[in-house]
Length: 237
Image (tube, rainbow, N blue to C red; front, side, top):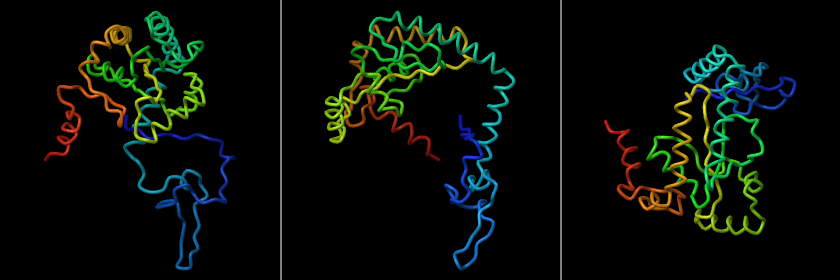
């Protein structure tokens, strides 16, 4: 967490006739009062303007080093093992549907929905009752989501009209669960059982929450302003 992203591409694709995407300090060789300037030829220098992200880069390097120490083959084998186990178990949960369930040769990132359960309520329940963090929504893949959820053009237009009027209650989505190869079998089992419990009990557990159609989110009835108060505490001196 907190590491910088790393972009790798074919150097031959880079056209140095254009200015850097974010020109700034460290990208310019010289300037003068008559509007003339010159950028460095080195691609990494040209595209890394401003103060270098020292801590983020160190974290990214440590992540790569850890991957090398574990071994790519070991990681791939563990990911395959986790995916196979989770797939087989989730498929047996009544009312649960794995998106693109015909493709099991994948990373252990599994998106699913449960009949009758709003995805963001599912996210909230997994967090509040089991301490499991997952993501709800369309995962920045709204267009692909149309195909996955079989959303027709007519239905899509109706939903987008509601969204334009600040009503997100019909916005489609799913729950995305990302599993890591260093997770233990016990942790994987705990997550599977948690999803199973949510599927079986969400109707009664939903009574403890209030839905906000403008934010498309659920708040616990005991203290709906809890999150805002916690954030405020972060900045107290």
